[in-house]
Amino acid sequence: MRPARPAGGPFAYVTLVTNADFALGAKALLRSLRLTGTPADLCVLHTGGVPEASLAPLADLGARLVEVDLLRLSDAFNAAHARDRLHGVAPFTKGEKPAFHTPLDNFCKLRLWQLDYERVVFLDADTLVLKPIDRLFHYPEFCAAPNVYESLADFHRMNSGVFTARPHPETYHRMLARLDAPGAFWRRTDQTFLQEWFPDWHGLPVFDNMLQYVWLNLPALWDWSAIRVLHFQYEKPWQDHPKADRLRPLIELWRAYERGADVPDPTTLPGPTP
Image (tube, rainbow, N blue to C red):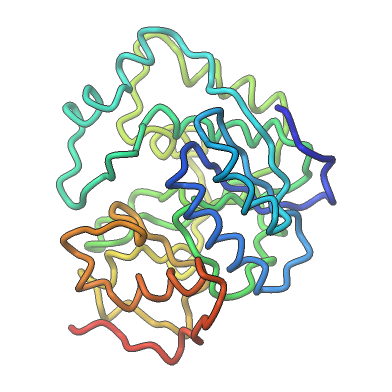
């Protein structure tokens, strides 16, 4: 852990950036957090794969940059979770993972348990915070929303794009021992691991991690006035992709945050077409 500066307090919002694309996402996320008026630290874990030019805007937004190494995992683990092998064994059939997605990078989320904060809220770099969520710092470890984007069956699985945690080095070391146990295979990388590590995870409302596919698949669940965190799972708003036209209001909202200007009130935006 190589932080650029000391922690600014006991609470922090944390995200992970492993390449220039996710740094672009993090810029919009940090701006959205700033607009909520939170006094918590904004912390960006980043790996060596992120160019300095991509990190500079994050520092300009007041983020505490913490450089981390990739986890030291066995050759067998790395082979089992390499992109082609993982997607071959556990293909994504509902959406498209972007070309810059590297599954092994996801496990770097576990580094947050090494941080020098009392409590953190983790947010994927492809999220936006539309309403204050500081209440989550007072929630227990481990809280996450269900992975709802297609049907009621999704409630059986959690989504690791937003969660609460209490950093502690002992937790981190125990996690690493379990993560890379002989024969271990985590079908959905960090998400599968965290759900097994915290089998009694506390469920957050879906509005604390509203997945963009709800707009497409469950339009009756969409409510701009209730959504606190919007999560662009699968296709990213800064990419051209086949679903872009159908997701246009969400993408335009993300672009406004990324620009840092003319951010609309989400409650004035149109809803999905049933």
